[in-house]
Length: 328
Ligand code: UDP
Image (cartoon, rainbow, N blue to C red):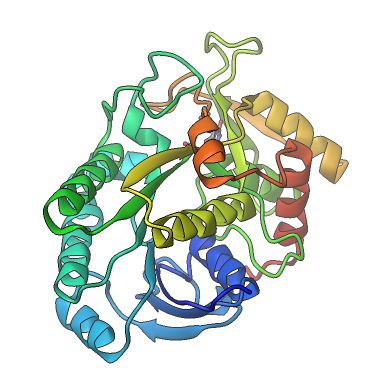
């Protein structure tokens, strides 16, 4: 019989965080969500206790940690837009690095361990080879990727010095939605390919801009590794169990290991929706590598993780079901 644990989810009202809350509740755990609603939505929570607050505020954390013990902390709260991070790096270093330092320092003081940190493929920068495994050099090419890289280094050092064990999970392209369409991707503003393509099909926005058609790929568009949000959440749960079983601080790459081009995604959107995506060609987006594909063998071998929704059409279908019923 599985034992119910008390889990803190920071940023639980966001896209991946809200799916994680669902996954933890389904697994029988008790969930507390800390979110300042700066980018998340209160009605994305399917359950758990909600606390409105800033995870970088030591007084908020002191109060929370002295009132109840936590068996694990999942940290999803961060700014995620590459372009914005280039224009306003101060905001990114402040939110993603400085606030996270406050979080882990306060965890340390209260004797709370077992942290799962949301990292990203952007820590690798321009790939030297694909698929990308954990040994690939980490040379981020924008402030967003650098903030995540810096936190990974802080986590390594906090384990060495204070014994605070953690797992950093480097997501490739999180996509899809709850198969029952209760929750889904809901960024404001939306910058991601699949929701933008679906919204263009629905006529909610003008044509989708295809950022570059002359990449060195078979059809000239960028290749990415799309991974279902519920599969990412499964990996978080397994990572928590890994830490509860005494696992060492580590980072894992999470993807399906299959790359799909922007054009292939648009073709899948047409298959699923029955309508072509209105598109226009646009210049390349700065800092977009031609190909990003994960080698997730380490996560599979260490955690026993195996994605349930590896098929691109299933990912797009779940996103489509959500897109048609989401509040907007
Ligand atoms: N993309 C695009 N048009 C858009 C949004 C994205 O052509 O309006 C491309 C982008 O250049 C990248 C892929 O789609 O190759 C996935 O981009 P997304 O922003 O969804 O995720 P990222 O790979 O940046 O994390």
